[in-house]
Length: 286
Image (cartoon, rainbow, N blue to C red; front, top):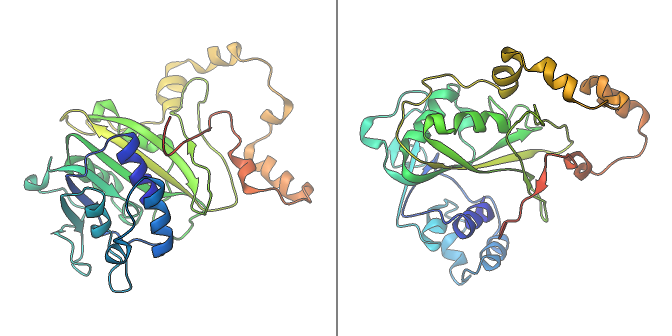
């Protein structure tokens, strides 16, 4: 979480002036790891023990250290002393809308049953010109929460129709020295962005609010249904497509079963990210 936020501040110039955490977030790392991250992005490491210690792991002090002026949090329960007590399953009160330059959720919405209302609340918390940032489970988190999320969900939800513009969608395995991967939107070339791997994967999303609109006036639909199948473009696309290798005619699930049966050597997890639609995401520059 820390390095993605530090990257967004440096690379995307997000404004931390008035920030709200969705669920009061904790820093799940050691003082040494935090020091390495701060130093990587040019911050002093003199106040590590004040930011993170055994008596306080809340992220508030971290945000203050990197420029946050007003740090709030929203939660359904008061057990972590959130600033705003509100059940995200329910519509947001008007007084909280359009108030924050950065709305950050690093692991709450997967636990909220009414996800459409919860994400709408987060979007409405965001000021015009402000940013929404989310970090969520993507693959191999069975049982962690109600949901695991795909990239297309966020591309369809945080869209211009709903007043937002996607800046970054990135997936990564949460481990030392991990590689971050850009994930593009679906298109006629890549009608679905999908992959299978062996380790837990997170998805990171950064979007900017452009204007106030009537959100979800039209319910989001997957691109290949709305733009291709239901508009009769599927057949013309097939004619334009060159002859595919035989393996493309075997269902993905069956290919995975065959791989498991016949592949005796253990492959590194990184091989699963070698897709034509993924590219390496540099935290410091494009």
